[in-house]
Image (cartoon, rainbow, N blue to C red):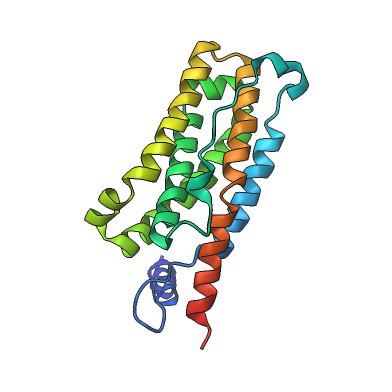
Amino acid sequence: MALLPSLLMALVLFSYGSGGSVACDLSLNHVLLSKENLKLLRQMSKISSSLCLEDRKDFRFPQATVDGSQVQEAQAISVLHEILQQTFKLLVTEHSAAAWNTTLLNLLCRALHRQLDDLDTCLVREMGEEGSALAMQGPTLTLKRYFQGIRLYLKEKKYSDCAWEVVRVEVMRALSSTRPLHERLRNKNRDMESP
């Protein structure tokens, strides 16, 4: 039992950089978890997408919100957070539990939750608690509308297997599109570490 406090203290000290602030390095954890999320989503497919061609829909993913060259760092963190949070909210419903393998769904939700926790810390550090909400309204509102469209689609389709398959593919697309944001954050972290 005495080992646990020592281990926790070591982790806290390890997470502090030479400048005395908690490091906000998302590059390794987020890239690995993002790849794992996509792998889990691929495994969650219950039916062939080709059987659901009539159910396809263009949800109009707001690509400009994830274009790494156009987004500032705090905005990149905020956009990543919103995509992961909205995906998480979509997946923790009773309808999604009925649609997919619960073991895979739970693994995916846990991974998303870990990423959200990391991003919460980084967002507060980058913008401050009050500034983050004000500065990110545009991109996050756009993403909220996009995910609301997905929820409405599911409801219209009565949460059918094909509707969930279409949504699974769309969520994979949304999560895959965050790569430029990950790259931008990873490059900034590398720049800060180099002498």
